[in-house]
Each structure stands twice: as structure tokens, then as C-alpha cells.
Image (cartoon, helix red, strand yellow):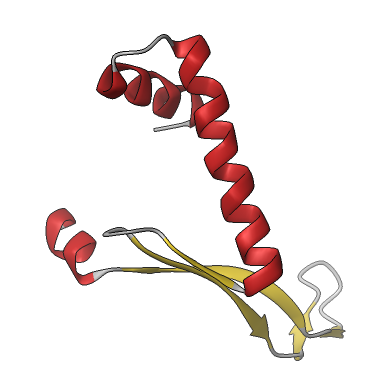
Length: 90
């Protein structure tokens, strides 16, 4: 499901128009992004948790030249599914 599909599903679930559902979905995305930036994690009810994790610096290999390169440490988003979600998709 993409963003447009999510807007359609929210509109049907809440019995509102897609035009009214779009700002709701956009607002949720904005709040989640702001929460990740400011607090480092956002719990999404029974779905799971989005977290910002630090990826360690590492040595990698350039596939074209074969030479080793240093990849610096960086922050990256990570999703950890809840037990309820994991059981639902099995």
C-alpha cells in the first residue's frame, strides 16, 4: 500500500472524503518525523516502534574498483514490529 492507498483506506474507514483524509495522513507523517527527530523513537500503537539507531563506521569495498573505503558512522531509522504485528502476518 502506498500513500494514496493509505489516504483512500483512511477515508473509507472514517467515512470522509479523500480530500479530507489527505491532511490527516500528512499530519500523522509529520508528527512521526518530528518525534523521531526530537525524541529518537515513536511507538505506533499495536504496530511497533520506529527508532533512530546509530550505524557504526565500517570499511566497505567499492564494487567497481575493488578498493576499500571508509563509511562513516551515521544515524538511520529502524522499525521494530510488535509481537501482535508479527503474529498477524505469519
